[in-house]
Image (cartoon, rainbow, N blue to C red; front, side, top):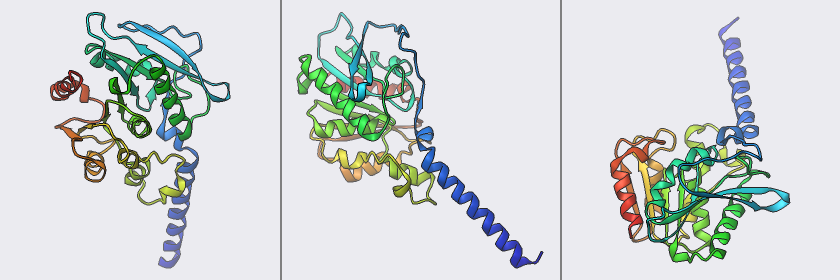
Length: 273
């Protein structure tokens, strides 16, 4: 086999691998992006804090399961936190973060996305937006005023939270480890593909953030290997307004910010206001 034939052979192999990976990215992206854990409809939740389970009817006969973690009984009622969680498991995985807010007098409303926990229905970008807005409207109907509602997003939930804050009124938007956009993040890891044409999800956090009127606070670890810190810096440079703030958690990675005293102190300070 001469050199020219070998080169052609390797080019064919590289093209086949490239196309195969591109096809996988297109058809399997939901499996890359979401890692839900489904729970049976009769599953009985047990948490170390007082809570209420709410089954919220949604479109196409689906159900959005929402857990309301109640504020500590010895606190003065301040308002509500809408907590948009990450892409892992279900609310049981994130329930441990609720005390960050309940100890300050906030009820925490945490929903599971379609296909997570007990929530049913089709998972897509439009559904993520519509169901979080439905949770917001439910909270408003329960008597919470916009100036008492904090919208909080973690990881995948940051873009969803930013979108919600861009179309509603709230006291503050807090984002933990946000991405500039899903397209931008995918392009970081799959730079060799035209991701804008392949992705089903865009979630342009940057565009939504520019429309948010409430104060914005971002927490991001400087050693985050999942969503690089540069995403937060880019959001600050392109979407911040006066009064917004980026709090860098030095040495923090993607899933351990809650263990840093500096973040806890800063979050406590925000929630005491």
